[in-house]
Image 1 (tube, rainbow, N blue to C red):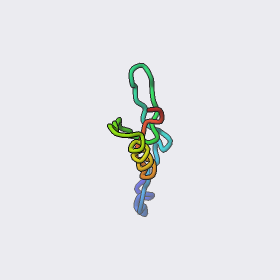
Image 2: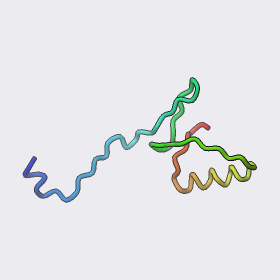
Image 3: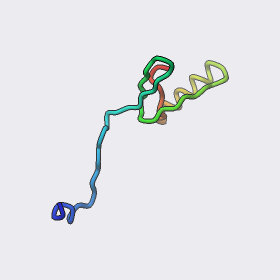
Image 4: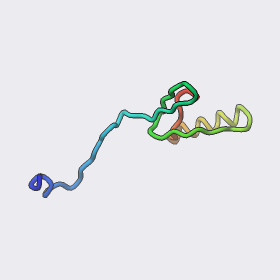
Length: 67
């Protein structure tokens, strides 16, 4: 190992690249689209909710796949 690491400039560990977070809500297990989704609430119009969801998706925010 010493010989291999003596010329190593970068080591990338790509462990669990396909893993997403799961959340137990009540008696149902939900998957997310990222590794760390959070619950959120919009207390406004459906138009506001649509705008927020679009921005979350556009900028890669972690979301539960089934709200």
